[in-house]
Length: 229
Ligand SMILES: [Zn+2]
Figure 1 (tube, rainbow, N blue to C red):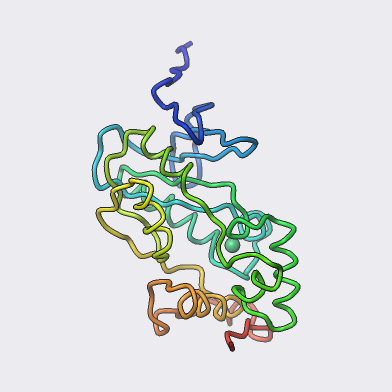
Figure 2: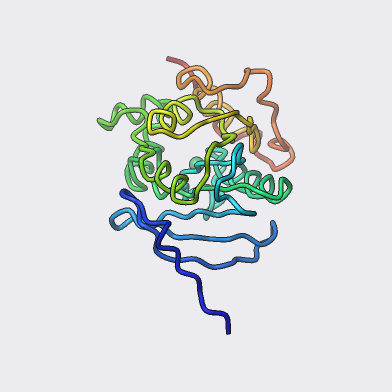
């Protein structure tokens, strides 16, 4: 039996390295590493050798239980996660950091409360504000530390979100490029996607938000989030 390689060099300030394994998935085989930030266990899901690498295709993805476990159609998170994992396999090198910050950092219970407010017509930004939170509480210290611990020198960030790029750059991560990721649009989340574009500076044009099979899956009568206000 091969002895597991523990990597003390992966230690870092915000999220010390904790565990590593190879994980076969429907997208191919990945290295999965756990980094612990307090009681939060973040994952680095990677392909290829990242140590000293530049222009590494990287996604910093925030956990979304409703979409990834329950198959919720209210957002695009699960489709983005699956697409990012498939992309780094295709590239032969890359990393998805899976960060345990549900609901843009407000937690699962508060996200569900925000959804309740959205049923009454609030959009995703106003719902968070009505609950007393900023629109986006996510922090990227741990993600920046994890990239540094993995030896990544610069990233091509898979995102539509300028805040994420600015957040990582402010923590010393070199973002050498961006890979747009537009997927998982349906009749239910079209308004949510439009809100992210109009109010959170997400980088896609309205016309790019084509539906992916929303009609075919019987969602035509589902309530579409209003982006008014
Ligand atoms: Zn989501």
